[in-house]
Image (cartoon, rainbow, N blue to C red; front, side, top):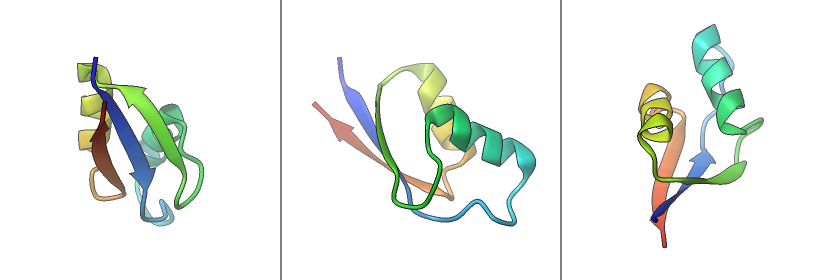
Length: 60
């Protein structure tokens, strides 16, 4: 199964509380943090919610 490499590229300061919570639930705490997650609809939805704060790459 494909995997997603999610990198937080911008700070969450000044963003909505639910955006902060979404970043935390993805496992991102600060700028330039990187997590690798399975490519599942749940994670795609979370990434779509905070797409202005993260970058996503597909990893095999």
